[in-house]
Image (cartoon, rainbow, N blue to C red):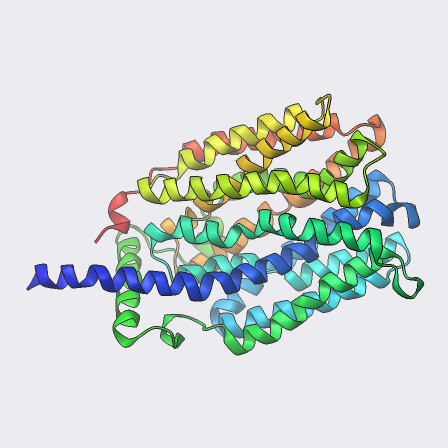
Length: 436
């Protein structure tokens, strides 16, 4: 009887996971792309905005990075509220508020107003990314998480692949009503978040128990599978919220993620201006096209590495090796003599840093669950994301004084080497957790 039950459970499980992948991941993926466009399009706006508002390199680094201070302040409370109120309502609220703030950013007239707008945008978006990471743990067992997270986080390279050409086109061609193109860029790209907020409230199920697309047997299977994993975590140790926030293992993950975000936002904030520095003849559309190439390479690498990580159930080396490649690319990037070499190094940078993400975000759920997972994931993301301030701001500060991006880019590679070393010091996860 036990053998028959096990044989029957395999197709039920495969069918359930496939349904969840097709119904949940595309939706949250689209939401993530919308979020990243509103967070990062300031890098493209800078191609014309900096001249109009007389923004220096140092000021731009601060403008890009101040977003993460607002993000940091509200991240943990936001994720705890999501776990308590429910994903559907809270994610919809986040989308609506950040869409409104993103559009209003297009109406600023001074650098000081831009500082405030970016800070408030961080407050509005706080909790979205860790909220989705937590939300996906409601649906996917451990053995499926790296691939699921990678399928969600391909939104990072896809944002550039899709958003860069659109941003370049708007900058070159949209000057309606005599309003500057960079303002239209921020206004037009902020509007989809409001539409998506309404759709989220109407369409996103809070968990498997609310999923109309799953049958009773499929709901029972996924809930039993996730409950079994929760029980296995509790046999080793159960964390409270405060214990999760004070956990040394969580803080090691914070430091690892800090290095990763330094590299991600060094790429997102400065790549357009780096490419422009190679030739003054490039149009905004040409720059956007060249910046898209590394994201295509990063997308392919991200999927290959996450698939390998899930297949082998190995996480540490699948983070450490790409991290080393990323640090190497950053160190070499500022010294490249040609456009071809620069784009090749940007490809290595994108492939390395994007490949880290899927395996990395499986690590917190190996030992945290429930409210402790909500708090721990939010802490990792909020403090780690301060790298999004430190990286761009440091590059801008150093560039202001040296007149070149090379030293700042090289310096931003050092945290990635530290991240690679720290992830190798983490304890190995027992593979029995994901096998039943």
